[in-house]
Length: 137
Image 1 (cartoon, rainbow, N blue to C red):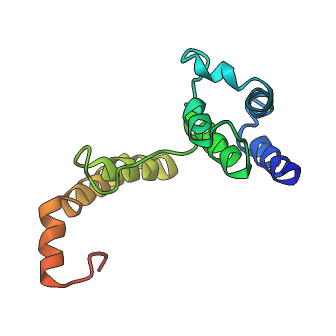
Image 2: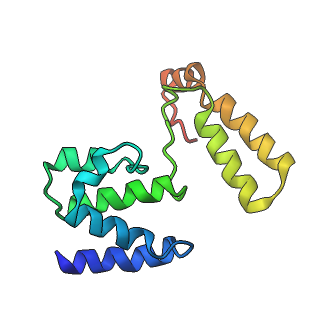
């Protein structure tokens, strides 16, 4: 859909202003030369996964997924394991790092990190759930 692609270009111009040709180049390659992304050296954003899931069809959903992959690769979107399945304290580290970037206050961001590590531990969450309390309270 041309309107959707145009909208993505507008958003790309805002987020990727440091490299204004990045998204138009990727969009063009996805549309005309998708085989480029089969080469892992060329596919720095994991776009082959999007193409594999779509069967090669580039509808609005696939374009949006590709754009999100590019934003992740450029550091605008971070994936966080909020359930703590991969690494204890991942959410706490993410939140504290973001807080520090906003405030530049190392002491407060470390306090936030320590508090979040404590309250997001699995046994702490289990205790709260067993008590029947709402966790966010």
